[in-house]
Length: 70
Image (cartoon, rainbow, N blue to C red; front, side, top):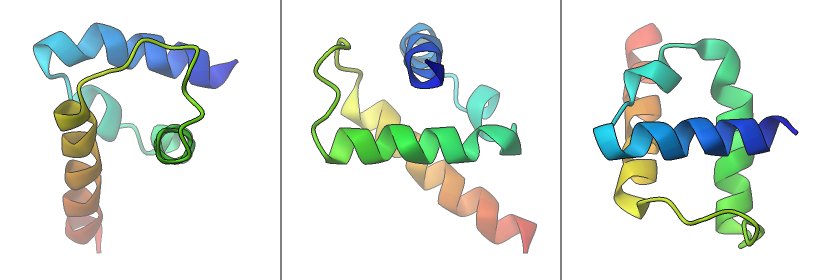
């Protein structure tokens, strides 16, 4: 499943605070949005939790990059 792979990539990137790796690829945005939606709905019980601060930073960066694109 794509969300499993995304979670693994985020888990690998979180300790090093990799952000641009995910946000520079526009094609991944729908998958990231689905991932964040699952987090909000508390449907992520099968995965080890990631740093909430890291995930929030990904969301903040996404908003900022969208503003720059317009």
